[in-house]
Length: 229
Image (cartoon, rainbow, N blue to C red):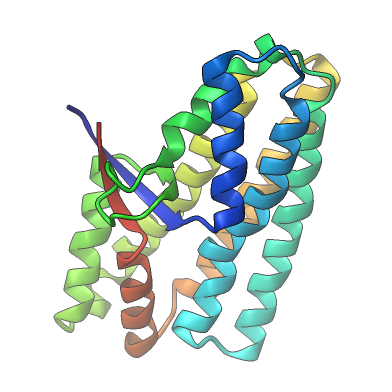
C-alpha cells in the first residue's frame, strides 16, 4: 500500500460520469475511437479544476473586488491556454497513443474508498513534503504567527502552483508524442500558465491579512487529501 498526497476537489456527477466513461473504454480496450470521450472529459475537467483552485477562493477568502478581478482574469487566461493546448494534444490521436493519458486519468481519479475525504475526487499530486509544509504553516497561522511564517508560506504557495503545472500540464505533454510545432505551443502554454499562477500568489495571496489567510487555510484544508492504494 502506498500513500500519495494531493490537492483535490470532489467531482460533479457529470465529471464523474465522463471520467468513468474514459476509464471504462481504457479497461475494456474498446475498438471505437476514445478521442471524443477524452474531449468531453477535458471540457468538464478544465473549468472544474480552475474553479476549485482559483474562483472558489474568492468566495472562501472574501477578496476585494480588485483581487477578485485579478484572479478571474488569470483563470480566464489559464482556461483559454490549457484548452488550446489540450486540443492540440488530443487531435487525431489513436487509442494506443491515448493509453498513457488514460492511465494518468486513472492515477489522478481518487475513489471514495481510497481517498481520505471519502469522496470521489480529482487530485493534483503535491508530494509528502509540500503537503506537510502546508499543514504545518496553516497551523502556525492559526496559532497567531502569520508574520513569522509569511515569507515561507509564500514560497510554499509558489511550490503548489508549480506542482499543479508540472504534475498536470507538463506530465500530460510528456505522455503524448508531439511534433516540434505542437511542442512549442505546449511549452508556451506552460510558461503562460506558470506566470499566471505565480502572479496570483505574489499579487493576491502573499500579502493577505490574518483573517483572510485563516479563511484561505480553512479552504485548502478541505482540499488536502491522501490516497492509499
